[in-house]
Length: 438
Image (cartoon, rainbow, N blue to C red; front, top):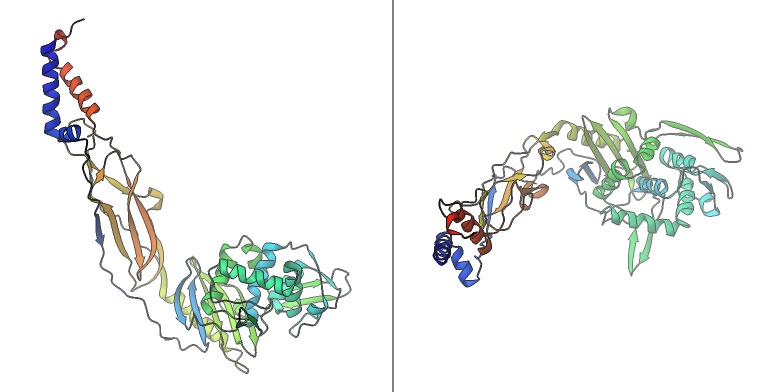
């Protein structure tokens, strides 16, 4: 019996020395993992496309934006703050839709009744349904309708302006400041600074993106802004009104489906709108697009911008089936149980359903693909564990990042496992069982 035990211990020690596990057993120290990453990067073929107003727009500020991502496809002073006139009303409309009910009864105050033209011409105390006022707001751009809506939703013009500014911040519009719900030129002093009612072309397009694609009330917004004409009456039935949509682009251009015009002396002609075609959705914003008598400049600019997007940008699947090397696992137990074999685990990018990436790109634009995975891992590791990333960039900006998963796991090699494994092999040797007493 003593002889058998001696043979067993000697065999264990020999196997431990052969696998390097003896050092761990004797010293109690673990191997140090140099977790330096392996990076493979496809050569970047392009830089940021510079437009330099090659379209020769009339607008002082303009932007063409991919509505699905918020990416600026064409810009002219797009981050410069300017007054925006009645394009303000897209924010007024979406806040009213999200915070009120279409069947709400709205009463005109003296403040609302005193708003300048263009107005519905309401009287103090006159009542309307909120739904009807929203059509008045967006089709005819009535300033008194805007004030009635603001006071109903926000309690006052100032209260509603706070809601407008908070919503702008929530949408990432850092260069926008609202004072009025109708877009009339205005300024006020706040925190020792004189603030003007203003936005940027980029911020205005972002707000439009939200209204047509992200808001929980987008369907209602789209229904209102796509309506060509609308008729309604006050709730007492004493007066009737009719509205016609002043967004001429709805009839001028195929695919145009929403928008809002604006004009004040300080802002000039302004416009924000949206067009869709073959799954592509573009938004534009134009600020300072001429003053009287140049009312048609905004339509010329709008068509140029939308046509630029439709002709230049198309969806392309840029997903690449990247080849990923197997990753060595230090102190891992091979699936075969043979300690003389290295542990190499394969990995995979995301799931099968994710293996496509459609981006709106110009013909000359290319993405860069960067793979980052560790040179080695320390056991234990589990199947499905995230160990790296494959990142797609366009013009240096990350557009998509896929996690890299292990397709299998490995337990950690331990002294106990070695003894158990060797003992099992020893017992399997011919004649050994006969040495062990019953």
